[in-house]
Amino acid sequence: MSNTDQEKAIASSSEKDDQVLEVNDGEKVSDQPLPTPVTATVNPRPSNKPKLSAATIIPIWIVLSSSVIIYNNYVYNTLQFRFPVFMVTWHLTFAAIGTRVLQRTTHLLDGLRDVNITKDVFIRSILPIGLLFSASLILSNTAYLYLSVAYIQMLKAFVPVAILLISWTFRIQEPSKKLAMIVMMISCGVALASHGELHFNLIGFLTQAAAVVFEASRLVMIQILLHGLKMDPLVSLHYYAPVCAVINLAVLPFTEGLEPFREVMRVGPLIMVSNAAVAFLLNIAAVFLVGAGSGLVLTLAGVFKDILLISGSVLAFGTPITPLQVVGYSIALGGLVLYKTSGSK
Image (cartoon, rainbow, N blue to C red; front, side, top):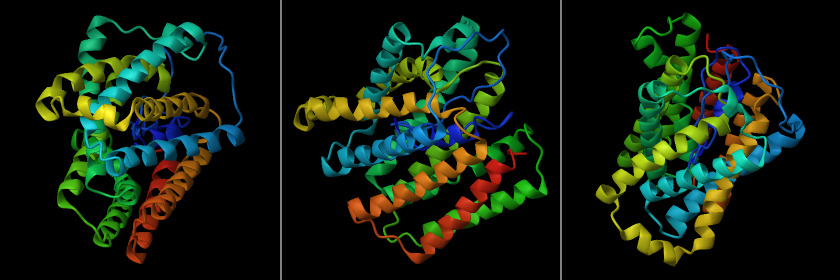
């Protein structure tokens, strides 16, 4: 799934009461973040899940996360399959089926036994968060039609700022001088990166900005509505994927119609299945990544991944980046590291 917005969730998942930031994610199609594991309200069960060391899983996660984003960009712009709503719907459908297969064949979704989703919880929590998730995924994927991979990654650095601004607006969190400095630091860095963008597109910028707002709103709602539920990335995907797939399927006739179904045969089933499979593997890697290292280690791994991804997009797609963008993004990354290492407090 798209993709980055999920990746940063993992980096913060080992920090107590931290905000959740994305697992991809389609860059999550979901680069997008899923709920962070928090203290369960029931007695924990012994875990039968296999474990991998940080040295093993971090490189795997970096490769899969970058592959999802670059593969999606290849499908949208090189193969000219310019149907982000259909693509997100397909990824979520694949994930909904995949999680249920894993539930019956592995121990990776044993956490479902510790989560009690009642009808009331579903209507009041899962459904509205799913709506925000769908909007975030569709908009973030649509941005690839207008902006380069490198510039989109730079704009995603603004997610923590959006989270803080929403939290302050609704008095969920009190402002502080340190957080205000971080907001200014990331904002100035993203502004410089935008000013230095050679192929700036207003529609693409506004689309990605809206995706950031929806993603930040989703993460804030998760913190409020799902506090106390123990949900790792795959458990979250198990609940959200079918909800979001149905929502997107309802939107599809009014946005892209039947055209993507005809274009699927041109692109080929192998491309579509492998693309969704890589995104799903990223979510599986996320399960192993959570708890594999400290919050600082995972944050630095995420920063390293973003730098590699931007560098790779420059080499793979010939995307030009300017010195001003390098300076601006470096400032924004510095603010992001401060945000994560300060525990978002």
